[in-house]
Length: 213
Image (cartoon, rainbow, N blue to C red; front, side, top):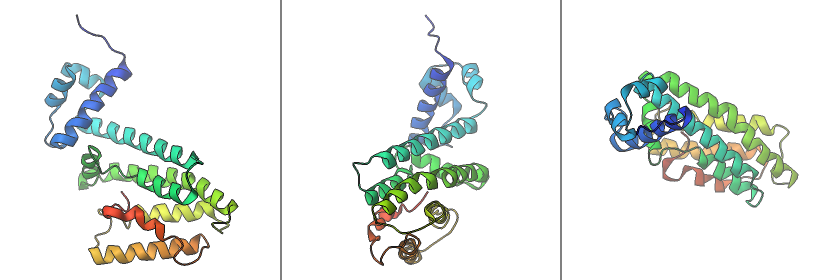
């Protein structure tokens, strides 16, 4: 007997299957037939939810973005973690280049997907500074930071990391990247009004070369 599922449930099944297939075979190496076979649905059902394979990727990117911002908000609200550690964890939560997410990163960095890349950047620049600002305000209350512009500081930080440390936006040698990272930490210390060297813990964000998206 044919199983009839709710539209949202079926849509998520398609996305889950595509997510796994894109991660294993790559976006270009995955056909719509592969997705149909994995989910066990007819082509008409697929096209009822998504117009094309690119449309599926768009939906996956949106889903990853929602999850990432949700995780970042959860970390920011966890008062059992120190202010400094929460800042690190929020930034680390923005990285989706591991696992299946690696294929998404590679896909949005293709020249033909510039608009998609721009959409991701916009979501991050509009959403992440506000999350980080709450943590910075706590740090100000605790005497860790000293700035009258917590939101603006975080906006600058996110905008910089999202462009300069984005391998698609700026091409850097390893030496240039190391210099940018040191300068970044140096300047963030001044933005937040703390002593030189006191934010060196932020170097954790750049382990394995994962500075930004």
